[in-house]
Image (cartoon, rainbow, N blue to C red):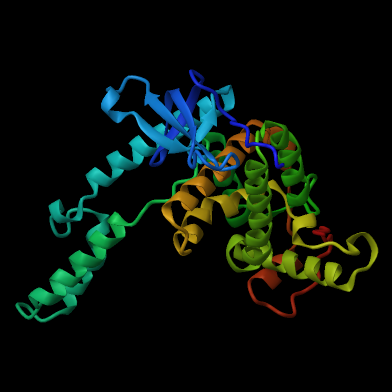
Length: 330
């Protein structure tokens, strides 16, 4: 006889429970299986949200619950802060209340009005523009937590590459593969069920796939492309230190963080349902919080200054004069 399913959470246990995109502190009032006749059926839990009336008590599936740990409490606080900031931003950008030309967002509309014949703009055209903008603002947002120190590192990274004409020294001191392996090793013991472990593995595989495909198309600044070309030749030839290597083995935290900055736009283009999107957002936010705490360990401490030959190539000059003192970039 197959063993009966075991409940991950117990009656009277303090937990965190998702309601839409926010984690609320809650208490489990009761536990039951979805099918009383099937001892292997999944559990559901009657929860009471702290500070809310009993009318909000609700039976929820296990995937909406999280253990009441310090890490999950930190995530809950961050998610709430991000949601409040997004709500305030949305309210200040309500398209129907904006006056034409009143802010930067109306520049395009102003230009279109100036190039059209006065009085000829149709009501249908105006309505279509409003509908498009309303649709944009009402689309489900996919906000991944990006801690302040990661934002600062992204700004510094952008300035080093685009303004100072420098590149990250590669191979990175900790590759994307190594960073994700370290996170997985630390996160696995915290997963209380095989389902949670499966989610973790799927998310890590997804990050690797996104990074591999997005690196040269989205993540690289123009000035870095010559470096990428040289590295690509090395790992495709499979010689020396680059044998059996690829982007995930060469690039590190800087470029991985760029991926997470663009991830909301990438996720918004998928057809995932709201529940899956929220779970993915939670998993990605856990990683950014972890990376933020370990930023000193994984981010480069120096950038390399490009020589004249490299600079000319990056500008599209195929036959630059060789530099007198070339700087090795790879």
